[in-house]
Length: 109
Image (cartoon, rainbow, N blue to C red):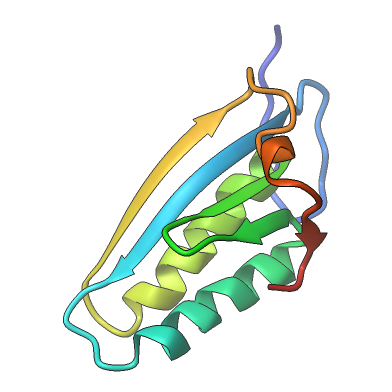
């Protein structure tokens, strides 16, 4: 398979793949955790990926470059407030990664 890389949001290349991701983002030593995490979710909204927030993690799915861009921007948003940890599992082999959770929404928490 030939690899190519998108340079701009929304730009697609031959070989793009749909992926699923489960991630947890932890702001460290912060007092306003909810507000900071809400900022990260707004980055997912801007990215246009499909996601579902859970109590311990968030699942999202979409085209690979879009998913990785959304993760990067969510992390940067949280890290702008201080130290942060991002833990993620990414797969292109699981089909609809979030199908077992029922319907998910695009953009809204």
